[in-house]
Image (tube, rainbow, N blue to C red; front, side, top):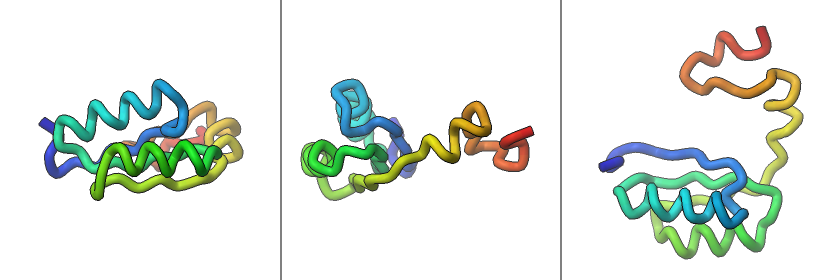
Length: 79
């Protein structure tokens, strides 16, 4: 299970992202969903319950220049 873990899902307002969020929620994770679509993020957060948060933002300016973001090793980003 993922109890005690926080999962960050980009594209959480889309069909695949919402399904991924729901699957992690069903396995005990707390969810942070990121997407540009506020309406779908709200739906995702409601579906996943009180341990879910939707954040509407554009991560492309951060991810695109770095060819991806490695959250485990942030000092290696953009090298």
